[in-house]
Amino acid sequence: MNHYDNNLDLGLIGNCSYGALIDRSARIVWSCMPQFDSNPVFCSLLNSGKGGDDGSFGIELHDVVESEQGYIHNTPVLVTVMHDSHGNSVEVTDFAPRFQQHGRMFRPTMLIRRIKPLSGSPRLTIRLRPMCDYGASRPEITRGSNHIRYVSPDWVLRLTTDCSIAAILDETQFVLNDGITLVLGPDETLPEAVTPVGHRFMENTLEYWRNWVRTLAIPFEWQRQVIRSAITLKLNSYEDTGAIIAAMTTSIPESPDSGRNWDYRYCWLRDGYFVINALNRLGTTVTMERFLRYLINISAGSDGNHLWPVYRINGNRNLDETMVEHLRGYRGMGPVRVGNQAGEQIQNDVYGAAILATAHVFFDERLVRPGDEALFKIMEGLGNRAVEVFDQPDAGPWEYRANARVHTYSSAMCWVACDRLARIAARLGLDQRQGYWRRQADKIHRHIVDQAWNSKMNSFVDSFGGTGLDASLLLLHEFDFLEADDPRFAGTVEAIEKNLRQGDLLFRYRGEDDFGKPENAFTVCTFWYIDALTSLGRVEEARELFLHLLECCNHLGLLSEDIDPVTRELWGNFPQTYSMVGIINSALRLSKPWSEAF
Image (cartoon, rainbow, N blue to C red; front, top):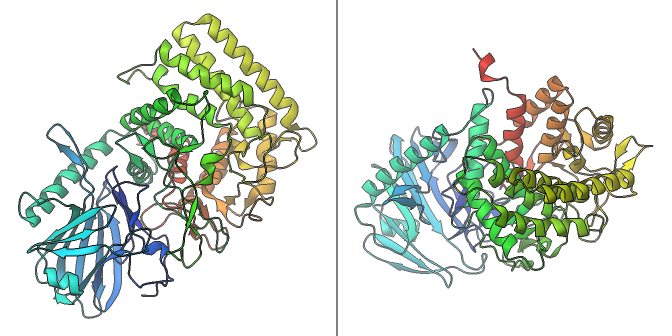
């Protein structure tokens, strides 16, 4: 295999503790353990051309000529079938256990691979090559009669299997006559034989996910796409704390050799809001409740009511950005970054995102612990901060590193903070506080219209007094800043489509930033455009664009952050929660209702 041929035709497995990405040849190319933002155990996705398969877990079929890959229906259990040139074939089933056991959720840092021959006598080589310290070294290896231990300074993993230990350690080829099971997980002895464990864990995991999908309130059209998106969002949630990561990966470039390589394995409060809002629309509340707990803990502990845009999944802020020298990068396109400088930025929209998310606990009767006046006072602290900063420069939603301005989106989200606090106060019967926050919201609204509406362009612009456009302005109606029938909203959409649309895709902006001009479209922006068209009654246009965008998904229905508008190849970190949210939101808006389905 040419190791410069890495692409994003990858499948995701996970269990809300960790995740793993698997390519079409059943090779695990990326996985951080024991949690999303840990040191990667498998990192060959970012190790092109250096060390062969170092940092991967491959099941190689000799003389392979063809493969097929798909998920077991309504689950994240991935099946890869490979065929060789002699008529032999083999099936590899990959999953991470997740199910109820002893009255609690069992979700260990454990990867299970079940391999069985489908026809003939396939010849396999198993290459298990974990790495330490972002590809800098290999772990120490010890062996037992039925297991192999991999020991690093940060973790100890045990592979338990009924396959030949020597065949794995020496990477020798063998004929697969019967099924085998490989369990890679904690350094603990399995309580029973590995094959029954693998079978039982898989059946229980399948049952869990099928039952979870049954709770979803899905649209009539695009059901498979919405279900896959919902499962993917669930897999990007870290259940222990409630955090939701932006993506599984770091440093997949937004476009070739652009240097736009970021680490997305952390929780952006903005992205988290979009995720839980989408899942809430599908009727699932547990992920939302856990994220709200995470968010409330951060808000309650904030220094002077100041929120940062991104946190680690444990709620801490140690996100110092560094470069990894031992990994060449995706297709050799470095740098590989660990940490994210955005954690040091001022992004004033975060107050609106936090209050929007928390508003659910005041209005959603399904939740066990409804919001009360004590929580409202915590949120008021964030609202006060929004009033202070709504007209102050920040990095904006696109996280400019050296271009601070008063961004319209950030200011509008400060308005959102005050507007939703007024609504929450009304819900709690706090008339005085309702009046106060309504006055603050009205003041901010007037100021934004005065400073960000450009009558010559017949559009809102990206920053106060500016003339630029960015796709976040499409959300002004989404957040109720403008009514759908407000001519200023239609004018803004028209200006954006003239300036930011290329073919069927939308760029986030066109102007130069810290790294030059963007080359690829930002996936979620096209979904925002589709939703804006739907709001304006341009439904047929929206449906056509939506169908075209779904065609950009990889073979398993997953999307990354960016899309090449010419080749339609996926770029950027993967799978991107923002993008999967877009599928859900647009499908819910565009689908015909169930009442008209039959």
